[in-house]
Amino acid sequence: MLNVMQHSRPRRAAAILVGLLHVLSAPVTAWAQIPQPAEPASAASSPASAAEAHSHADAALTRQHRMRHLAERALVPPETLKAQCRYESEITTPPPAKKIVLTFDDGPEPGATEAILKVLAQHHAPATFFMIGEKVERYPELVAQVLAQHPQGLASHSWSHPNFHDIPPATQEVEVRRSEQELQRVVPDDKLFRYPYGNSSCETNALLHTLGYRIVGWHIDTCDWAFDRNGSVDAREALECGVLAQNRKDYLAHVLSAARAHNGGIVLMHEIHPRTVAQLDALLSELEKAGFSFGSIRDADFQDTLR
Ligand SMILES: [Zn+2]
Image (tube, rainbow, N blue to C red; front, side):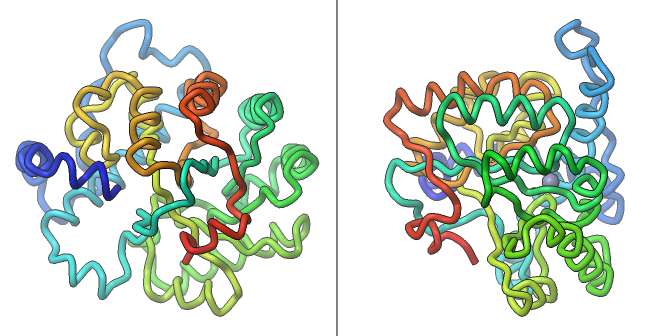
């Protein structure tokens, strides 16, 4: 986030104030229940299918957790957050120049996984899939398809995708170990982990390192959950994801702009949002046109960006 933040600090500070007035009007203890804005009744935003309805529900949940992040970042002293190892997923180490690593979270997802694999093959792009353990168990045939095309493309995203800040360390450990058990059936050497919502903890950091994991965050937050919800992001979502004002209605422009600001990096996307998947081909073409190449998270020159 470095470049984006540095170049827009005054605007960012103003947006923090405006955005937080709304967030803070809810009691601090009720952040998890921050009311969701009503969906506009336009055809474009009405769920067209069960998959899209599922995506909307998930985006609303993601929004709740991400807005808590935004509020905490503004209210809690940075040294306190650091002491608690919270929110370490935004990578501050620069990526290798002009190199993009694609990551897809929250799968496998019937329909989406196959579509993503097809687009990746067309662009000869490697990718890493941070999968939810219970979905790995449910969709073994999709896992097999991913592994056939990306033998090193599987990684853990916990067992059931809870917010690790809402559950005690012992339950966090169950989430890590149960997911590992499931993934090890198919990839014995799988040792990459990404926290759900990026919400890290000191206890699980220590556990993951003891178990031999590298922890993976992101440089470029596509904010796909917010763009997919309404096709545009509001001021608070923009603040949370680093979306510049001029890109708040344009998903592709936002990702391109963030990629340029970081000069490459690990890109965070989600399999579960149909429109994200639908725009993948266009996104990869734009990135190629802009001179970026696609690498793997396992490449030697990306190891500095992992924890
Ligand atoms: Zn996730």
